[in-house]
Image (cartoon, rainbow, N blue to C red; front, side):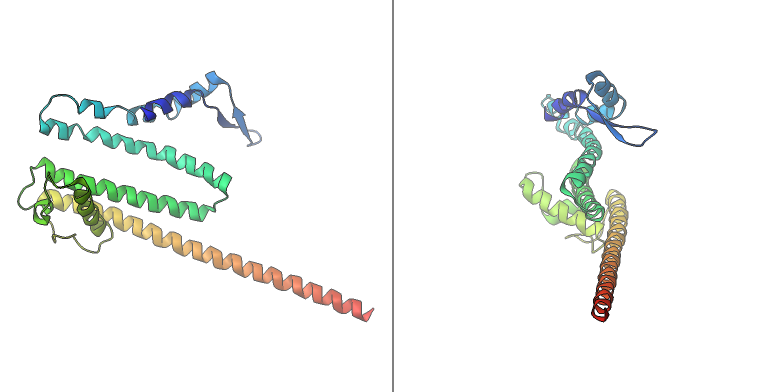
Length: 235
């Protein structure tokens, strides 16, 4: 309901328009223009991401069908771009540096994909009725295990794959489904690791450069001040 109400709010929310000649940002508060702009931009994605899929789970269908009906929930990931748009606005109001904001975005995405991978890996085993060679069965958890315990083991397994530090608490995969899921998880985790290392290195380099420039400016100012003082003494 919150997602659906957000759609109606966006239809009556103004937006900034860039003037081509000057490049300036102009605030548009006309309601028809705002509604048309939203309909042409983010309305389609927000509508798909806001579909009330949970109400479908109340239908009297078999447990297997209910499992498959959970897939549309993944459409809510399409709301991530909106969150990043708000983060860009926070950068303007709070005064965060672009490097810090980029690092926060990357860490947030890393956690999102870890959460997504953890749910998918448990869900894949659940779709197969928890085979004996799956990591869920070998860990000792099952469908009736408390949700927090299921999630803890799933998240630990996913992070182990993404950070390439092992295969979790059960060792390597034993079936083809786990092989593909672990392969994708490792590729995504390695990509994030490369991006994080590059961003941290770039941030440290920029900080060193800024510090060096400040020291040089301070040294030049002190040199000019000393020369002016020396000239005054001579006069």
